[in-house]
Image (tube, rainbow, N blue to C red; front, side, top):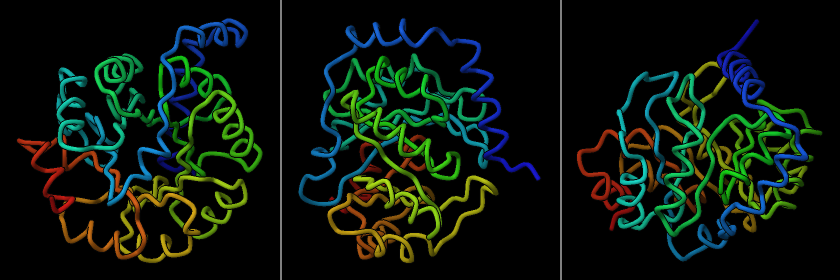
Length: 257
């Protein structure tokens, strides 16, 4: 039976095919890409860090915000103390684009995460060409060999990798490839259901030397505090920020600053 994630990946593969060029040509474009910023160091700073997301819509909530100028929004995030900016580049379900990432990366001075469903070697290289410093790999969307190969390739290209899990079996797979940044997503991408216990259950199982990130469903300071208590070093927030009238104030509120 097909899942929501299956449907998203199917669309992503169609879109990749439409813009694909030979890998030899793509590699040449890396020479023109911006110098990589260290996302691991940014997330390792003292205190709880926030990955603030530029996100127009989602499969679970529909349209969230129009965001005519993603670079302006990212600049507000940076001014409020975000450690990393996440940019959705998936078009069909999330309303993003590669152009959004390029615009944001040129405006801010902090690392940028490409938030997409990376399921091909082409996308890994493309992510670096676009200027991303951090790349998302979703365990549920990839085989063990893909996880290992794509993380290795991203690292070779200078990027760091955020490996996303939502249950214990996926966490085991992330640890098997020695992921250095692991995000626990409380939303099951196959069903879009939220598991309120995901952070408290999974974050304590991640070794302390790994940067632990709590993702999805965070809208209140109390939820951030619970994630912190479970061991989260950072939180990734999108919907709450793009819907806030004052995203900078929302960041400060979530972090208790």
